[in-house]
Image (cartoon, rainbow, N blue to C red; front, side):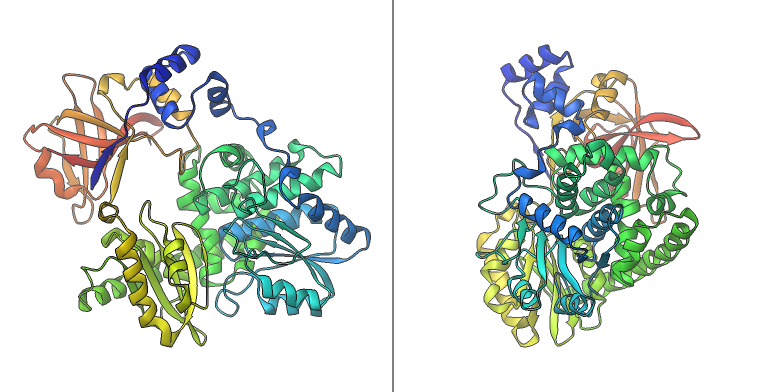
Length: 563
């Protein structure tokens, strides 16, 4: 692991903010590092309100989208809400369809089959709309590159409204409206919304035509917070506001579907991390193992008993997904070993029988072992399909774009993407991808980095510090859980390796006679000797609060140790 200590902000800026908001220097430092330098910015950060959300009509084409939906309602047209099969797509479809159904009945939903139709708008979906007299499709979390699909629909007198957050190509689809803050000609003040977030802005705009205000839409924010957490978008601006108030809904009055998913969780208050590891994988499992329709059915169900039954089925899908993921990862690692590809700058593996719904997870698993841009391919119909995952600070989307002559289609983000290609192009693509990454990646990026916010002493960790630190939540990209470095610490003799294979480390540490703290280091069991026999060491860690038997205590969640 590379330890990188962030450079300290200018002392004058830190002191000015410290004096204005009356906080310890370390808290002011963390705020300035996050771009928060004034009293007003700090007030918005610590006390966000729904009134801080932007006017949805600032988004390019929003007026056209609302006008077309209102015309459809006035003319009693059939409307189809279409979305991707992942968490972002299924939550977006659930949100927009349930809002529209609250005052209009002619609403259908459609999630493409991951295996039969693949990602994004499908011809099969358009044919379904045509066969069922649907004249308007609202596409969520997909469609920004679906130029041919939108033209195909137009020939059948079906209009499209695109609500997407992925990067557009050189040409936009000829839809009635294209809502995407990443459009070059869109001046919307915040361009990091997820697909469900764009769907929420559409609902927010529609609400203004029905004399509703933001308080009438709070009940939908559990869906938005779930999508923000799952899609790993920046936890800044509107995303942070929506996530914060969405978490409040999840913890106080979630919809029956989410309530059913978390009813066996023993924690009093769920965080964004809990949403990422408890709620999101289960919603995703439906689209990975069965069909995304199952997730929409769960999230739009109003009867808790029915929702509990749906959740039980989805729990089984999640168990199946875990088994698949484990077996495929073993096979992929074996393939890398046997092909002697450990010295490459990329990981590209292929097996025709791998489950298409799990290849993205396997790509992430492989990065844990071989830290480099990774593609996992499987057979999909007469083509090969892959999921891409990247390492920190390397744009895998740009790398794919540079090899696009070998691809049939591709799309995604800096850190995650999907693609298809003809089987005969696989080896040429694999070679080209390796060459592009080799030429463009900085060697340092091939070693995992721990970015450290600040170096502190244990004496600075007190109840006030913890209270203020908790107000930095919800955490996520660009507002990550702070990582601290403390030097010259010693275990008090309680350290031990734990876990089935002694892979984890549990210890109790002190620094210069200060109050001690318990610590847990997952996958750090091999470092036991480094800290045993009262040896002095340094550690990087997050500060956690551990609940046990009704008692809460401060715990260090160790990320790495060095002598």
